Amino acid sequence: MHHCWLNGKITDVASAPFHFNDLGVLRGYGLFDYFRTYNGRPFQWDWYWERFERSARILRIPCPVTQQETRQIVSELFALQGGEDCAFRFLLTGGFTGDSISMHTPNFIIISEDLHHDAPGEHEKGIRVMTYDFVRDLPMLKSTDYKHLLILRHEFGERGVTDVLFHKDGYISELSRSNVFIVNGNKLITPHENILEGITRRTVLELARPDFEIELRPVTLQETLEAEEVFTTSTTKRVLPITGIDDRVIGSGRIGPKSQILLDRINDLVRSW
Image (cartoon, rainbow, N blue to C red; front, side, top):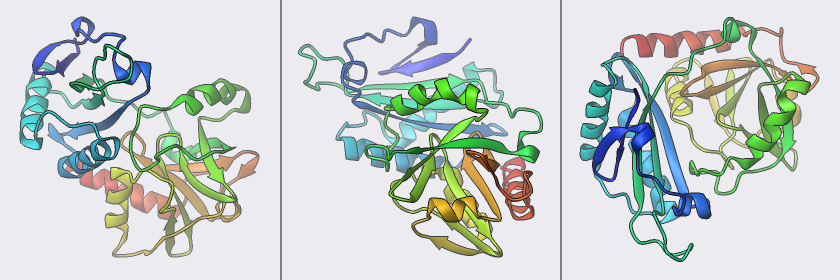
């Protein structure tokens, strides 16, 4: 059974008293964050909380609990989950409203969830993605607005892809739920504008600094298509190669040697977390 904490009370998810007149439902006025545990410890906890607070400030939704209080709640939910590694989702919305527009008291929900498991062979063979001309609204925060992804998902099956690469005016930004890197020689290059700065992205940059030349800059779609290696990073993906973009094969069509180095490094990090 999965549990959640909602405004001070822990309950099973199915019994949580969350109603439709929430501003997150009526107006899309909400944000979330998502992280997981390794060996019972929340991964990069301080970094995730920092990003969550920043998102809340941008949306001007006050967070009702402190970082220390939230850490204790996470510990209680982890114990109820059975002490097995799991994921946690934070959801902060404008709260219940009587006139469909005014915010009074935000709703803050913390939910324990099952972990995402890799598809067999995915990290060796990589994934194919389609391109789409779009930049998310307020891309620097994790808002609950994912309607473009949900619309485009209907095309994934017929195109044989698993995700979408957003680009605008010739420059890429990110996948629907993860960051993008390209590798050329010893250069590790990733966009720095119109993106959510992912925690796994930040971790990979730290792991790469001793041996790679890092470039944070605008990245064109054309140079992405011509790159030696391309990969994406997120909590669930870690370092996942992108081996096809639209009809273009990237590199050898399998994970490249530099991507493998970084995947090995993050795997080593989380094993000893």
